[in-house]
Length: 404
Image: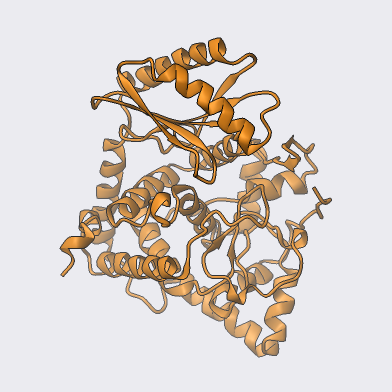
């Protein structure tokens, strides 16, 4: 991988605000911890000092609620309670957690008998904090030497031959997927199902990164679960149908929370690079990110300056999330780290809803076509409109076929 330039974490706050407003004018979004000198130069070229000043003023008005009616206190409190209750009901029971752990233990035992040196690593929602009673368990089987797609499919065929002996589950091969998998599901409800891939190691690291963000602030899990439920209910969260993935939605949420003023989240990767932490290479990709609680608190304190920590309630954040992607955002790569120095110069004004992989820079994890982009923006606007009218979260989950 090409050498990485160290981003500056100490850009003046005014520059960060100019960079934060960039998406409305076609400039690529960046994480709040990133250097903003390049963005300031781009803003200045679009119209000089007056333009730069107007963008700063616009961003302050947006953060103060300008241009939209805020939820009344009682409405925000009611919706926040509804979101918290909804997320709490999705919390897996201890019995289910124990069942999942036992399932993984037994699966590891089966795999060890089939393939020499095989090791199992869970990833996805079971690791990142968004696992629910209805979620599949994603597992990566690490197999030495299975580096090509064909080799990985051969390993999956071996695993499938063994798993089909289980009378309680059925096996479905999905070798045509972007990442070949086996779907192993129970014949009756109430049992754990899983998706098995081979040497999908970067997905494991991505899940751990997201899990660290979730553990930084309780609002992340609440919002993430509710957004995923909304997307599933509105049928815009199914990769087999070409719609957006849960991973992309979670990255969009983290990106949004990094851009609040003051921010809810910092960029864990930018902190690691600024602190010159030792690189951690996985499949040739530098996957370092900060896990030091003290450094993370220090970065958040720096980002907010003299202001108090962000204490916006979940209702306000959800409303603003939908407004941001339904109305404010126009174009630009959605990032949760500063990657501009790692990419060739390019015009991001043509990029709508490109969600950059945190580690594999330049890889779009949204990967949706123009028709899906239009449908997604429409759904964001619908959700924002509903909440802005004071409607309940459950109203957002109405089946699209029942829309008037």
